[in-house]
Length: 217
Ligand SMILES: C[S@@+](CC[C@H](N)C(=O)[O-])C[C@H]1O[C@@H](n2cnc3c(N)ncnc32)[C@H](O)[C@@H]1O
Image (tube, rainbow, N blue to C red):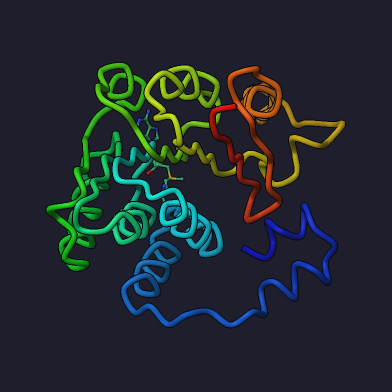
């Protein structure tokens, strides 16, 4: 978390933010330890807090998460939407879906979260109904495509968040390694879209690895 923030913030600011006390949450802490030991790329804790605050502030009830991993973001979002809310979360690795379902059962949220095994673009293309909160946290090269698929579904007061939009600071770098060029190009296009498309009003927040945050204009 702090290493990613160091690429964006002044080091003393990153150190201060990392030193702030956190609420105790045994299940999320267990998932963070599991993710670290199994090398799973879960959301940063402060991004999870932003998801919770946003979902609550927006009164979101219908949530779509693109990229489940072990269910960390989905659990946070499902807690925020309350018992009459619902989270659809998409993951293309079958074994990772099973790990997520296990943690979701442990959280007592199996009735509120649908872990959909499949490719994100295919599942998003088949979505129907409105979405109050969309959380994009999947294939970086596909962020512009996810935006195009999600925008028509976003409710009037809907919010779209996207993680890793500063990609370790590389989106702001002059020299981008070849291996990262496609990712960085897509993330730059995504960031430009959320701040400049006429139908959106958005910002890029220097939280975690960078979070795109947008609503309908
Ligand atoms: C960064 S992780 C998601 C973290 C999660 N949102 C959280 O809050 O902890 C991205 C996940 O997307 C999954 N993924 C990668 N390509 C995918 C695709 N084409 N369709 C669906 N899921 C995919 C990966 O297996 C990985 O588990």
